[in-house]
Picture: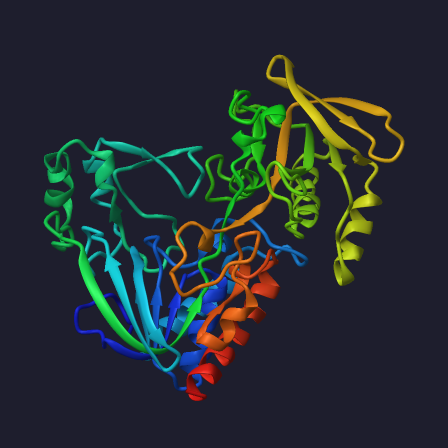
Length: 425
């Protein structure tokens, strides 16, 4: 039986994990299967984090269900894991072996009676922009985050309605009495021995990069938006169509280091962006046989075993790879775009005209937004390794930019570090 969010959950545990993405999930199941009691906190209404938004991840080009589904089963079957979605940590006090954590649990307005039957959805007219799809499609004010959501339960976005009366139709349509419009926020306290901070990342705000004109021209999108466009459950049901007119895309430019390695934006390299664009180039090439892909890079970074993936893309004559920093993107008519880049070695200028541009924006750690007082950050906003001895240990992209496989390994390692620090007290 699943460990759902109930008032009867224990308030004491061996480990509290902040963040229900791939690192946090890994940490939770590894700790619980080693016999530890775990509390897992996630601010979204579902577990899975950024991985759940992807179409495929490299190098095997697996769909997210490949890794998430088995982990959701492990959570569901393990009574030592107690998870709280729509929840945020407000305060952490104490020391390794004896932390007190205050958590605010926000209302979902849909209780555990929900079977995800969907009868409520047609009864509501109010809509909202889908944050899961980066605003590229709408959902109703009552919605299922996505078809693989865990927990598989609807949620209500109260900010999408002017008054709760707009949701009366959903209440009346639900045969299971699953909708509770009077639900209130809760404050929960947990006593735990160790804390793993796995709050993940967000894409860098591409609108800050003025010369690339994201937000001005609709056919300039980000790499995470491209993941959603490629996904079967995305805004175009997996068909790669450009936003302005839903036209099939036959020419695409990928702009690497969009804001990264730039002292005015992100001074560091996010490490995975080159691989992400090479992967997304395959989305286009596999869907449209006569498509042309142009990739502009400063330095191609595909370390270790990933070099083979890069070399295979180079063998495709319809994928052109340029060393060049993109100086400007402009619209030239019919929604098409001109990409102008300077070769960083020779100084020569290159121009190409394409139907869509994908910006490879970097990874920004969420922990930098509102770090607890007892967490030390490095110069880039990531958790510093010095936190390990305190019993609050970072995992995944909370620590550094990294891919899914490395984040999984980091989740396991963080459990060991946190429990070791607690045992030494």
